[in-house]
Length: 125
Ligand code: FES
Image 1: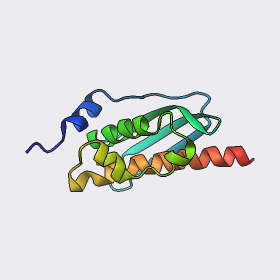
Image 2: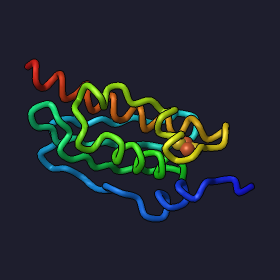
Image 3: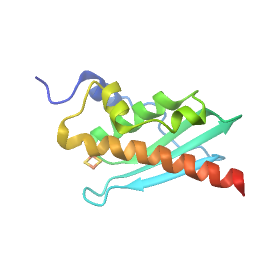
């Protein structure tokens, strides 16, 4: 069996939603101290719905595929749904990741949660 699913390879080779949103409503940046990979998420939110999402990932192929898939999963979703996104859901949508690469999907979950936190803080202030 191939180590990586076709979906992982597809999202790694052709990542969706790469880039920056200049006037983002929420930005989240997280990193993994062990591997040194960094992920940054930008959210554009209107009426509590995620209208646009972009990411920049400086990391391994699984981290890039996870960020790409995570953005696809939350785009067009209400904030309340995006808050429920787990790394498991990201990995499942990619048809699985090897066990030792699961932490890469955790980075995607954390980056989105951090961007949503930033959005909430900005909204409250
Ligand atoms: Fe660090 Fe994949 S090896 S995020």
